[in-house]
Each structure stands twice: as C-alpha cells, then as structure tokens.
Length: 472
Image (cartoon, rainbow, N blue to C red; front, top):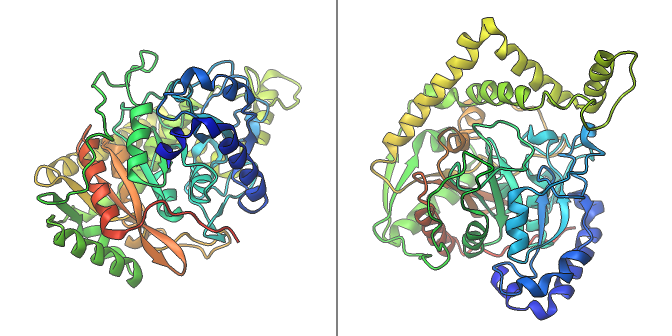
C-alpha cells in the first residue's frame, strides 16, 4: 500500500484528504485520535520530497511522539496543554521521506498499559468488533491502520505495546532491535525496555518503514551505528531451510482450541514450504517470572523518568498554597489510577532498602531470561508462538486470573523481546468469531532481514495481508 501511494504523488492531496475524512468519520466509533493534524504545510513541501520512500503517504503518530507546535499529551491529563518545541528524530526522518502526519493517536496513559483503556480521552475500540479493546498501549495507532485510515502508524513497545495490538487488530506490528531506531523526542516509559515500533498491513510495507526510521542519531546514545540494510530489496518469502523454534511453554498453556488449531495449521504449512520445526522448552519458572520482573523494572524506571511531571516545569498545573501542594495536587489530578499505582510500585522498588531485594533482583532475573533466549536462538532462526491466547478481550470484560499460566506465560511471553532487545514482529494468523488472532516471531539481534523474510513466508502461508476491518 505504501508503494502504491508513493507512486501516485500527483494525487497525494486527494489521498491525504480521504484519510482525514475517514478518520473523522470513524472517530465516534473508534475514539482512536487525540489530536487531528492539519496537513496543509506538509503538503506544501511535498514537491521537495516527491521521491521519498513515503512521499504523500498519510500516517499517524502515537501521542508520545513529540511534534513541534502540535499538542502531544501521551494521553495523560497532566500533559493536556503540552506543545513541544522540537520534533522527535523519527518525525524529521518521516518528513524527509515525504510522509504526511494526519493524526496523533490515542494510547494508554504514558504508555503504561496493555488495553488502551486508560487514555484520558477514553477507551479505543477494536475496528473488527467495537465491543472489544484494540490492545495497548499503542491501540490508537493500531486501530487507524486496521480500519484503513492510514497504511502506516508509529507506536512504541515497552512490553508488547505494538505487537499485542497488531495481533488483536489483524495487522503487522514491528518492534525492531533495541537501538535500531532513535528514541530522541519520544516521551519515555522505561528507558531500558522502550522501543519505537510501528504498524503496517503487510510485510513489504514493514520493510519500507524500517528503512525510513532506522539509523544512528547522536542525540540518542543508545542508537546503533550499524548500517541499515535495504530490507525491501532483500525480502524473500522462501521458508526453505529456515529453522523455526516453537516456544512449547506458550503453546502448552493456551486453552483456546481455535487459537491452537490455527497455529498448528500454520506450522504444517510452514513445514510444507520447507521450514524445519523444533520445539523449545524454557524453564517455566523463568517464563512465569516475566510479568513481575517487567513490572518492577519498568515501574522503577518510569518513576525516575516522570519525576519531571510535577506541574511546575510544564504541563497542567493545579492550585496549591505552596510549591509542594502544587506538585502534589498536579500529580494527583493529572495522573489516572493505574499510573499512580505504577508510580507507587516504582517508588517502593527504588527505596534504598529495597533496591537490592527488588529492583536489582529483577534485573538479575531479566538476565537469566535473556541468556535462555540466547541459548534457544543458537539452533534456530526464530522463535514462534501465538501472540495471544484469545482474540481481543471485551472492553467491559470479565476479570482475568492473572496467576494462571495462560495469562502469565501465553499473554506475556513477548516481553522477552523487550528484555533482550531482539527484533520481534506480529502478523495475522487467522480469525475466531470474526476477530483476528496473531502469531509472533522473534529473531537474533539486528537480524531484521531474517525476521521480515520469515514474516513474508508466513504471510504466503496464511494469505492474510492488506486486511482492512469494516467498522460497524
């Protein structure tokens, strides 16, 4: 879709206006947009970038991506009036390649969540079934791509915040290697886990997306100096000789028959295409420890990262009789309940007396999980498993038993990609009750070429690409 649009720059204004019209039309149903962006100035400069990889392509940005002069709230009340004075690095890269931003997309508040239910503007609905979540924290971006508004949208992925919504919405969600894309200008969550990610409706477009976004940025010292390959030119859908490792712990913990039938059918098709399949068993105690380890590391880092959101330096300020009162009142009124809970957890873990037994211990467990991944990937080209055990939950759903393996393991295994920094991608696998189910693959560090090629092979096996939900 990106290639088609960029080859039709003459009609770019029409394509952009169609996207804007559709976004406005679907907003009452999806609630996916926080701020609509006037594209006039961007279109005026399109002639200067008409040969760009995304020339004239309408896109959306998650609302934690700083955009100069355009409100950027991270879906939090405390940032409701925040207008950045600079662009995130990726905004400049997208602009250079001719992309036209039409919207800032909803997200879980400060990216802290997996449902997109905590946004200050309210929940985002899944385009395939409006009674269900789009997933989080990048649910707004996912919904805009899945509903056909835009062919490309930026998200961020700290635990699986791009890949889980992609699975729920029937699209491609990419989290590249840590350092592959600069995070300069992205409102942070957890510095050691945050990745810039993005959504498309097919693997070829995903290749183009990374060609645009990847590369060194001296303003982000964690960004890599490694050369960026021409991913789209190297794309091959051949699975012959590819070694695929099934994460047996995940498949064993999934109780939904439809999910497992679709997954097993996919594995059979991959075998028929020449892939070599191997089952891999991790220490189940390690996988059960993923979620608590993630919560401790992420929330401790978030507490430190967001200490500047105090109502004094910037953001919405509440009244108070003293500076301390202003800070307390601003944070109390400005943050939602879930964010406040996470800050309490993070503060507790950062107490001097708790750092060794909580925060440092979590870091050591993380290292054990990464070492287990390294060992598993020595003998295979990728690890594969369903992206979730079921289709997207209802917005007003039943409470989940968070101690059972189907939740601890099957719903959180993709966090391993954030612990390790390895590239990971979710693609459509099939449908249940008219809603999508996704499959996730994870490869070795900076081996996005293999990831995209295996993804293209999966796309060939399923026949599921360029899906667009009919919003009802």
